[in-house]
Image 1 (spheres, rainbow, N blue to C red):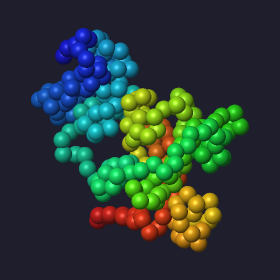
Image 2 (image 1 turned 90 degrees about the vertical axis):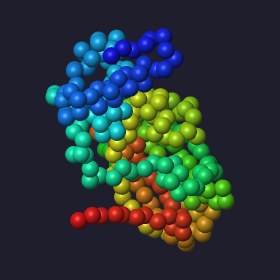
Image 3 (image 1 turned 60 degrees about the vertical axis):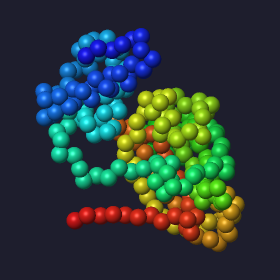
Length: 242
């Protein structure tokens, strides 16, 4: 297990390759614990933060599982299943073959509502501001969704990031945040004047409202997202198995 510090490949990417080799080895593939992070980072001659970045990626892929106070172990082949991965908006559109266009993109700092503050587990909303990303998105012909995303103030976002990039890719690459879980609420109403103007529809037209509560691999709340969709352009499908 050697890391090449003179290589152009990032250290965390090299560490990830080494860990993947361990996962596939006869010694570890049946679910053995990995060496603890202190020893493993010393063996690889990298920092614990760099090692953790590689481990986080493999936890996200379901190849490793981390338990507090116990350690990180390899997931036995064949025992993971039953949960389907949720997709980001960009991934959903890519699967459908739709090229996404941003009609509006705004960044601001806002005080969260009490509901959003509770989601982020903030004790006093009066003393904080959240980075808020607002986007009107659609295909090349017309907009069909208006997103508002509040981000946990613990994330060191500046508002200067390139938010034209896929959001979760940005959080991963710049802040080592890997999102894992999305809890959702779906409701319906009439558009109203403000949303109708954003989506180029009538105020009396129906819209679907999709709230997403997004958490990272450690269960920390990351994003409070509200999406307002044109009802004629969005179908929500639920698949259930018995």
